[in-house]
Image 1 (cartoon, rainbow, N blue to C red):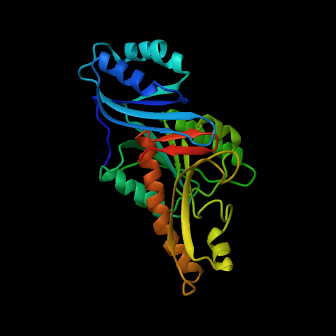
Image 2: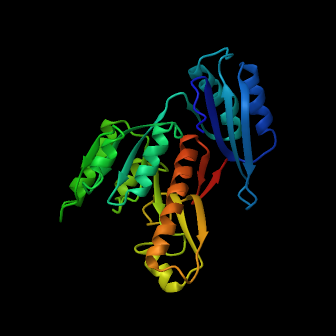
Image 3: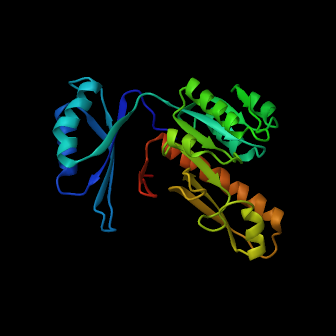
Length: 289
């Protein structure tokens, strides 16, 4: 379930690995009256020497404001350890869901949101088809139909970006949105566009992965949630899963099995992003689950 609480903040850190980081952070928070509820840490073993830290802490006992806490942390801790850091929490993130004609990922996310399983505000759904309008209407969320007309793709994308800015969106979820985004679009939301690809990447990137998987006679069907980058289907991977299949399944069977996997993989990736559990470095991620 979501861990969003008005009196809880999250400190998110990545920096060069060296002794004393955890001690310094813990002592700093203790000295200012914070109560640490959860802490996760990880150091890379790939020679890069990178350290990652996620700390959830209660703020009722703070002796300073949040703004003062951030200012002091920057001066006393972050600069010393060369940290890339931020403090998150209190304000719920705002996510826009983009989809085309397939409904399984979109409706699954909306159902989880309505059940209170995703701590997020969803101000709008955007689609390049009008097929899902009535389904989305049952959730009480505005539906924006922006078709891709021949020769007018840049105008359609500009309209999407204008809506995202208007609604102050933090996260864009491509819930089987079957259009390629421009580099400018992706650059506006770095590590904040989550895509679901209906394949266990790097296998069968691009179009029609189920058809190619069937032709190859695969024994597992998978799905991959990743952050979108300019390199199609090659962004940092957040979550993956697979389901075993046999020679008895035809192409449509693979599609059916795959859609079940897609829904759960995307939901987990979105939830972990909302809870600030995903750290990106290079083209890889550290995910504190």
